[in-house]
Length: 129
Image (cartoon, rainbow, N blue to C red; front, side, top):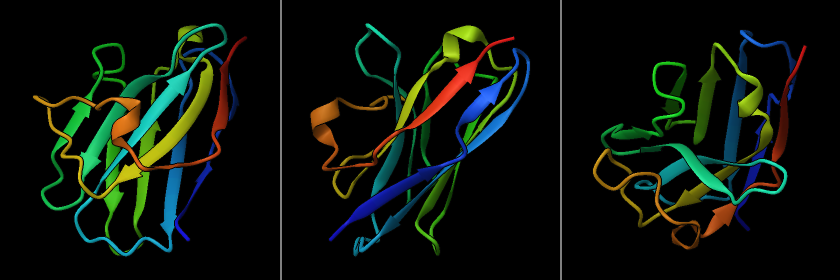
């Protein structure tokens, strides 16, 4: 059974940093995309950033470019999202997603929700003073 487990959420002041991690267990694929989506109260879930395992091709939404950095440890099947210069509007539940067929790139974007077969439970990020 595939499981995605997120960690690293919490409460941080504006301008602060957090690092989210997501580890895939029971995940037999060597080629896959892993991404981060977020959902703020009353809003739809949106793609934040993603990365492809084979060539480290990445995508980041305009709202987080220059502030968030995604990286992957293929040996551990773990993806990290380093979030710097956090803003109150970054407050949301952050979800990790993985899919063995999706190819993440600047052209493809983070993809639609239905394009990811596996999802984590989510981790809360709150940016507030």
